[in-house]
Image (cartoon, rainbow, N blue to C red; front, side, top):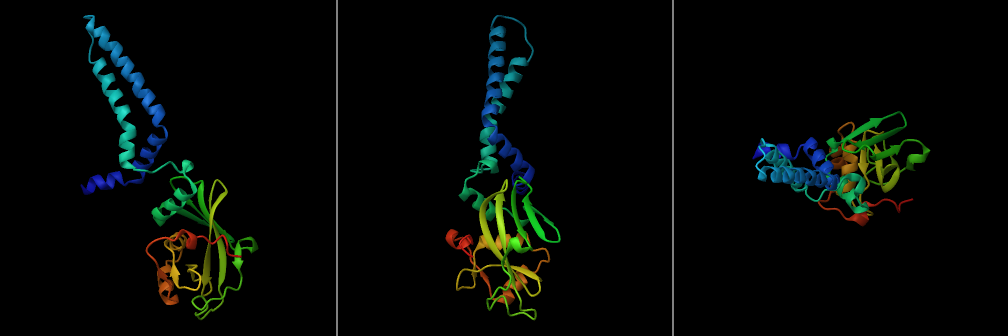
Amino acid sequence: MKIFDQITNHRITRDVALWIKEQAHAVRIIGGVFLVIALILGFIWMLDVKLDASAFVFSLLASIFFALPSVAEYLSPGRKPIRHMTYDEFLTLLDDEEPQSWKVIYTDYAAEAFLLEDPRLRIRFRHDEAGIHCDDFKAPWANKYPSPAAQSYWYDYVYEGNLIERFIMVDVDNHRATLPLPDSNSTQVQPRRYKVAQIFDKMGTLDEYMQKSGLDRVLSNNNDANSDRLFH
């Protein structure tokens, strides 16, 4: 059972399942073609024409192709191909994917994470003026370190360059850690913001500095609290 779970949860298995779900109509058409061929061969066999196992092979192929979309749905239940997702589904995807599902590329002035499954889905931020939310961020939990200055940055979650959502992350202690913005007048951090911070946790200091800052991660998302688009 453990081996079966490993196979069904493998990224390649999921990618194949998603491709089949996206191409379900074409897959069923192919199955229908095989079924027609099998029927024709069956009629020929009824006319006492000697045939090999061709009719059986084509009927078997038809059955396989007809079953593939159902198998794909079993392996990846309720999951759409990314390019067909709605706004809410994009957010759910961010919640569900592990940090290891993202590849992060850093430059001197920016960083960009793209989803391995579909590199068009990205999270990006810039260290220059265009990406700065607040150059002198003030909050007790952010300014309590030997290097008290803190800066906050916009992190944009985009698909094919189109903005889905914005998050604010705060660099503390001379950029030794990037922390998610807690809820207003609170030390509670929404899971989605934490996930973004995890993806960009290059130095592995996130949890240590969360604890030092007294920030607590809540267990379930509040979508209104997760959005930082209204911050200026």
